[in-house]
Length: 109
Image (tube, rainbow, N blue to C red; front, side):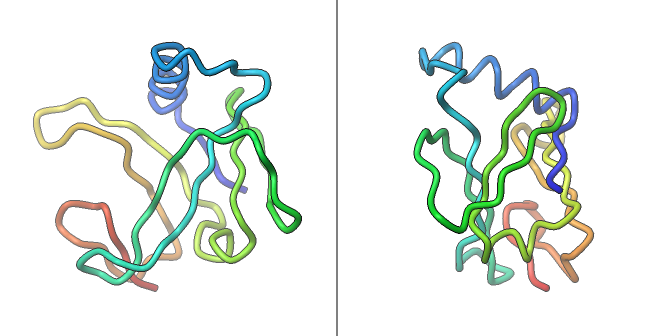
């Protein structure tokens, strides 16, 4: 399961509205890609095409889809959003990460 906090839900809905994304057909695609200072980085996109091995979840009213390979890194991860002084943007609370970089955008397992 991939979880979505209340703050992240509000921000995702606002971004979809601003981009005029038809929310009933689209979902949030979360993936893990190579890169970043810790080796792996998170990637977020709006998408409307599912692939054969995609894993689909819904939490807090937000549909989240990830490919199977990424899901292995994302099990029980929570997507959150911060608008505080110490950083603004989406971040992941990932219990599978053994370390993450200072900016929080990349991690290692």
